[in-house]
Amino acid sequence: MMPVIEASIEHIDDLCTMDKEVIGEYSRKDMIIKAIEEKRCLIQRTHSGIAGFLIFTTNFFECSFISLVIVKPSERRKGVASSLLASFVSMAPTPKIFSSTNQSNLQMQKVFEEAGFNRSGFIENLDDGDPEIIYFKSKVIEIGK
Image 1 (tube, rainbow, N blue to C red):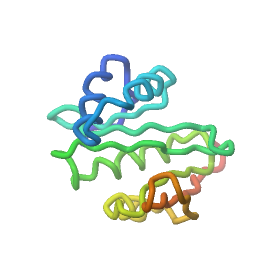
Image 2: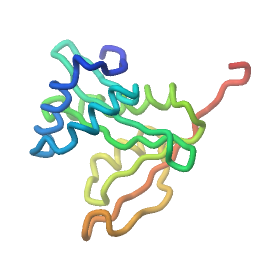
Image 3: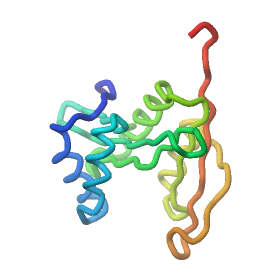
């Protein structure tokens, strides 16, 4: 797999198309554009193009929060989400990293757990009848860096 890189403006159409393929609409286009402009969007490329992307923030109680991980359906179960998570953890600007997924999203729960994230609680009432599970990982900081 190719290295994870920061998304740039030239990637907007590909990312929005991929997001629409996953959720069925373009409702997050402005969010994706803003994340790219603010350098908060990473992409995973393969030889066939962009396979997935990750968007993060650093304003979750002064911690990093991975707010979105999208993998192109044809690229799922190939390590794309795991690669994006590992790359973000290694470059995260804060020592604590959080993310979340719906209780119904068993595949993403498995990805988080395999990436070393631990369950840290849940939030009710975001999606009716489908609580959001919060995940946490502490970044290992090497002494002298």
